[in-house]
Image (tube, rainbow, N blue to C red; front, top):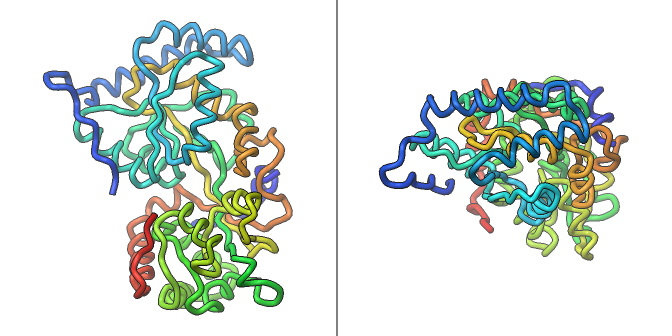
Length: 376
């Protein structure tokens, strides 16, 4: 199981949708006062379930949630074919509907920030990439997460105000009709320099880039400039794709031969449908980043929000993730990424302080490509 395998590893520091307009004449819902009200209301929920676990805790939360007026809204970057079935299962269990907004992680972040600036809250629960969760937390847009369910989440994925719901694993993947045998890469340097005009890189993977550069400096003795130059060389001879799903599908279609940072779970999904794609034997270390979930600071349905978060972190929902070839963050759930593959963790908190540096550097790297950006 990936959680136990990763927990002992060294942590290496290494345009969105417009906001929904507030109804004319309504009060500003996203104000500092309403955020304080959301925090106070959630504190009351926590007080009511303090010390409770299992069915007793669930029943109490259900009673509190039934008293709340208003719909429950989830903003997520998880694909609808995965987030939809999980929220549907939550609705079947609780009879509470979930209004689901799905977009890329950057679009989810931008929408929440824009809605906050417009004093209009849209989300009750947020589930997106670790770096974006860290930014929202820093902006004061997440409430404290106090739940016994987090005791089963991998240690590096538990924070004060959010927790990992699953683990995104970055791997190099290839089209088996184009690359096989001795051509299969055995190192990241080979991935970046060994496939002229055949490599695809993802547009937004600055955290993957930063973590891997840090590894090359710390473990392989390169200077930062030497490591970054490998990525520049790769971009000069490769193509850039906006979106991991699009990149995986185009790889399967033979539009290019190999990718630098595919989401690992997409490759077995495609292979099960007969696509000629593979990621094993793996290029090590694989890069692992937590994807998180938390309660928005302006929620007015805190019991429903906590119910959804606890369900998403529960073995029931985490087992559904395994069915989608995702790597669960709950250590009690078997499945996900293999234990015997070396991994390197994205330190989302450490990278936040240097986000501008690494985003700028990666943008400069990507601009070395003369092919333009392939979009879905």
